Picture 1 (cartoon, rainbow, N blue to C red):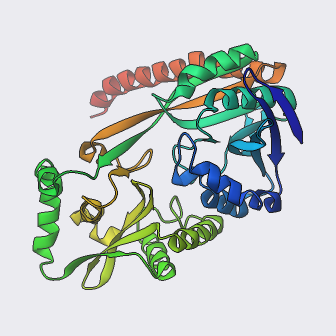
Picture 2: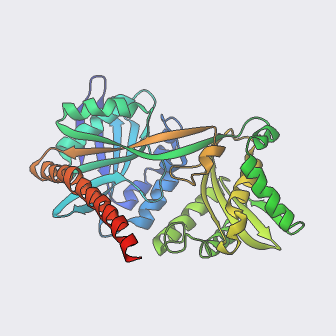
Picture 3: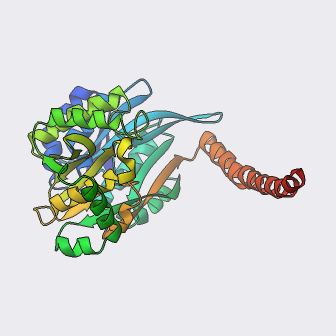
Length: 389
């Protein structure tokens, strides 16, 4: 599928790639575009998206990679890596277009060449509205509050008669890796206290090691530890076979480019806590961490996090990104916290308008009544309980 959009300053051609072989052919041009885009991230690089498409595509998920090309220069100017998924809210079934690898991605951005930002978003929304009939809902997660899209998309949606909604999303702690470590360390009393406790109780037996090679062994060690943590079977790398396959493929690619590091905290050479970081440009993406529940009282996760931050301090990296929704205590350790939003764009048709109206009624009636009944029950119970005694 290919369509032409005549924007104010550019004529833009849009294609949707669905076959994994066609997407692989984009690798060279994707990597070139990524180096010149408005918001480069490890999560919108070719390797992350491609390996996620290989690993997570199933019966209910379809690849939808939109490429935008400037006709006059025949230059690739944007890639919107999306997936289509079938959703249901009570009796309403609808098709949603989300970013690829939704469960694994963080603060996803389309890959847009500098100088084409507004035109590409306008052309993409126009294309979704007029040429993608099976898209009922466009879901854009973890959009930082200061991003241009927050100001721009409402007017674009209004222009195309689409429904735009915005909600608060997760927060993301950011740590500056520049400066003096001792000064940073002195500001965090709780961190120091935890470290002193575990170092004192395991004096001479505690070791923190950073591994930059032998990725397969490191990943297997991490997965084994994850099974001893609270994450077992719920979240994390080893939550299912699809996730494990993805991380094996992605880590192999990162290792080849030298952008993968593991931090292991051991007691008597037994692994008790582990960290994983991706690196790109001046940024360290602190993406995964887990610890053995048998050592929970020592907060080994906080300890290994401290050691891992110290490892990257005053290195060639200046920024640590702890991802949206990461452990809340890291907000107190960060230099800034990014607030993000979730953006929902709906097609204005009978089905979606009916669903949104039903959802609004439920939010305004059912939940308030339930809260009121709960309070009434608590009042009655407080009066009856003393009488029973």
